Image (cartoon, rainbow, N blue to C red; front, side, top):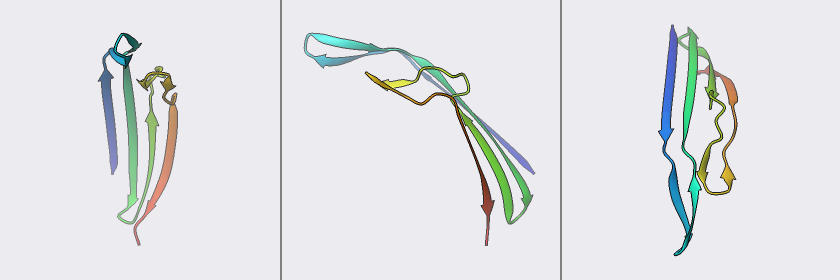
Length: 79
């Protein structure tokens, strides 16, 4: 069996206030993630997940950039 997942989060631009009279604009972005899991047997499965597949500049807080595109993989063994 194969399981496929996809997730898309859209973040709009917003103003983050540093003090009463000054603010910084945090730009909006789209964050697309996708994953695949292959169940080899009921006890063993393999998975891979890609994050930020659009390679956007992700910024949730002013001056703190998020991670760029990344991939992670793993094996699940049920004992």
